[in-house]
Length: 105
Image (tube, rainbow, N blue to C red; front, top):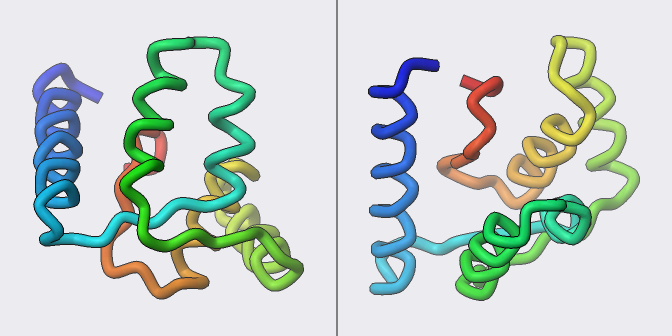
């Protein structure tokens, strides 16, 4: 990913958080994100994700259907954790999916 694309991604995420704080969009989170964040060795990133998760109005807990869907997504060369994030977003019918994971673009 180019530096320009990274800057665009950061600005998009920042704007999304501003809109969330103003109540213009609804942020969702999942047990998968909480698990992944708790294992993040970078304290500043962990704090940022916690900050964002505090604004979430929806929470999806991983269940068997989500795990099955993630396995299907993995067949398309999507890594297991990424597949779980996407499957959770699909489960609550998210209209948008934001990720700082540039390999998903």
